[in-house]
Length: 169
Image (cartoon, rainbow, N blue to C red; front, side, top):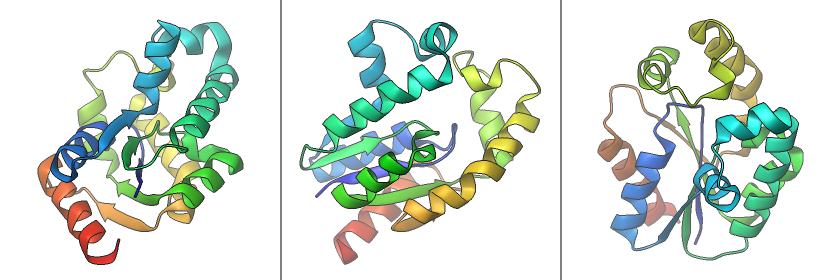
């Protein structure tokens, strides 16, 4: 059983993923953390040096490797669903949960984080809205389950996912 968590930046993917992995005794992985650990560089720095295209290539490679594992919880970067190949990998190797998150919550959660390369050059609210418009359909297309995070704590979102896994997994 693999659990893959997708959603926009600030949706709580990493926090929720860690809670689920602890509760279900599964190994937790995060694609962004894995990229940073292997390169010794921040995502922000990779974006500056290689651009988004270079980062996305690294992301696909990491996803390919991690999706071969079993009994994992994987939190992904917000843009991982942009690639057809990545969506196919996610769909074929595990159960995908999309954390649907209001723009206001994303804004609040990302406002203190300076390591968000896509939010560096412009108004964060406008950028988050544009990302939502281009990515929402892709998140929904790959998701086995859509979990709304609105007015829920990370613990409550994780509990909802755990319930779905136990009832339908």
